[in-house]
Image (cartoon, rainbow, N blue to C red):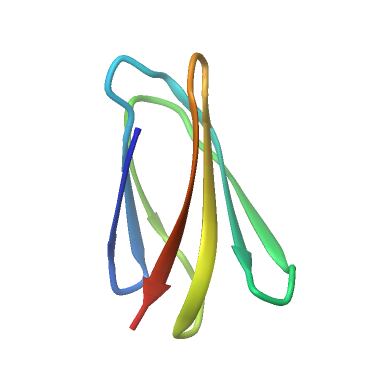
Length: 70
């Protein structure tokens, strides 16, 4: 699973993985949930600048990554 950010757009690519859910958490603990399907998705996140934890859950893989929105 690859996670790419471009400002507030999150691009997730699941190579050989069907994506199911994306969680985006800010440093104060607030979490947004996105239900997705497919192996390639773009998510426009309504977030401010800052550091976020992104957790992607797929059918056979999970990835958590820290991202910075500038």
